[in-house]
Length: 115
Image (cartoon, rainbow, N blue to C red; front, side):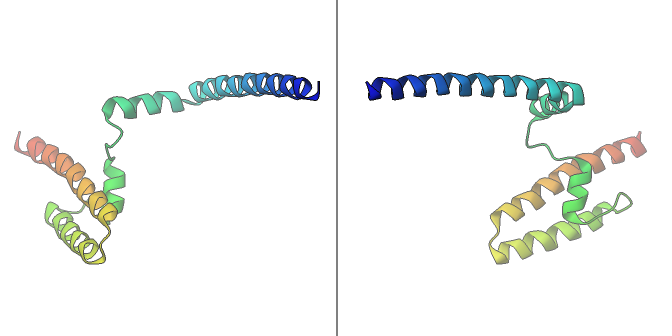
């Protein structure tokens, strides 16, 4: 008798918990849609979640928008080599991705000035 009562309590409790989680998820989605977070996330998924913004790349390398490509390469080489010595592959990859991101930016600027 006690086992049956405990089983019923577990089933009822699980049902209420599941309903609460589902309702919370629905509200979270609604809030995300209202604030634009869902749209932002969808854009990141479409563009590739590993895409780095120009601003983030500049922060990682410690360069400004006025910096020349030579300055960017100098910072990249310094940071990449320092992280190779310390052994931080994660930081090395972030530095490399930042350089790749800025290559696209500087490549576009060169095309605009040449054209």
